[in-house]
Image 1 (cartoon, rainbow, N blue to C red):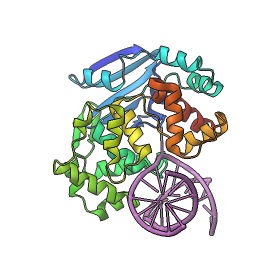
Image 2: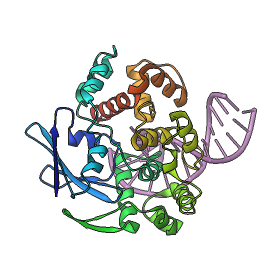
Image 3: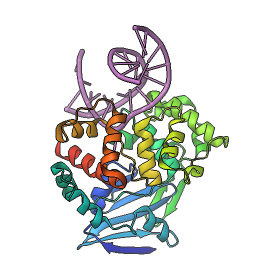
Image 4: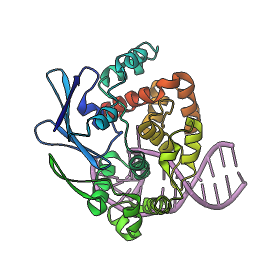
Length: 280
DNA sequence: CACCAGGTGTCAG
DNA sequence: CTGACACATGGT
């Protein structure tokens, strides 16, 4: 078992996991969190000013990258505080322990298709059911867990089975994408070298993927920090806190990316997490 | 009962 | 091009 210890000032495990970028995690009862990603698992928690990640030997580099440990978040938070926008300053101070994860691209694609017109607790439940239904059963240092289902496994499910997981009308989107990936017609990994604009265009060609999901996959799967997803919460932030008057989510995205450039994705996450936390 | 949730596809004008 | 509407599901 490997153990990674780092400074916890800009790495709050609970905030990083519960800010809405990742769906497969749970608290283990002692304040620590078990996180599943693709076919791996880690246990993480904050203790005495530090953030600690425990994982299998050999997964150390994977999780250092997954939690984006090489990046200096103090500089990002400082730029948010100095942006001149009060709401962004407040949000960044509230969520300064949030890190943007480097998650599995395929898992992000399927997960954010599930997310559309849906709420986070339900998204978590649906993904959990999909994993239980067809994810490979694994045994690790923390007991049994399920891998995220491969495209082949998902393609093998009937639309009735998919709907049984709670997917509703999204079942057709999942099925079509799974089949297209399984046949080799669609390879998300090959998108890595594309510019952010080209990447988004490629993602938009998928049936069931629109602007918002494409931006989330770009940000959370490809770490494109010049992506700014606009959902119902961010639209509220834009209207209420930025006093914005533009209509159309694509224009709101353009406004934020023009304003915040490479910081867009990080700032979006601070704003989203703060807004959602303070209105519940 | 209506309305909402990390929206998108489709169709009418 | 923009705007209205349907689309499953579970929670308030």
